[in-house]
Image 1 (cartoon, one colour):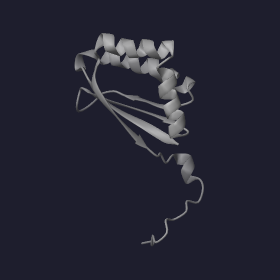
Image 2 (image 1 turned 90 degrees about the vertical axis):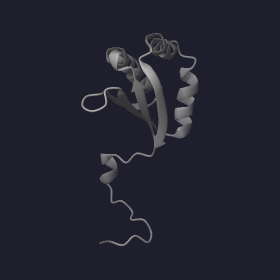
Image 3 (image 1 turned 120 degrees about the vertical axis):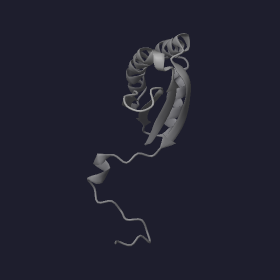
Image 4 (image 1 turned 135 degrees about the vertical axis):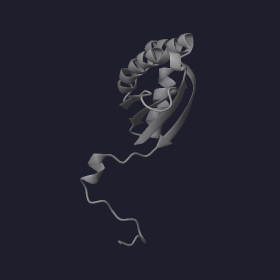
Amino acid sequence: MITCYLRYVLDPCKLAEFEYYGKLWIPLVERFGGQHHGYFLPSEGANNIALAMFSFPSLAEYERYRQDSMNDAECLAAFQYAQDTRCILSYERSFFRPVFAQDCATNPAKPAGLTAK
């Protein structure tokens, strides 16, 4: 599994527009086989930073989603909405290998050479 972490720099005067944009994308990612973990909007601290995370079973499936989303009418409309409203000033994307609570249910293998303290 791979998790895409998005960090957005927003126009702080357009948070409502960005929230709407996020609500457009959650079901779209899920329709393409991803698991969306949500959008995280500013609350305390910086008023122009938001985050989003979603996972796909593999990098190949994420890449297929990216490719297919470029030809999907609803995805293109969401992209256009962000462009028209200019709610997103910039964003960066990073990828991670997640460890979830269900991964703790099994007895994890200790890495070779690791000693208990």
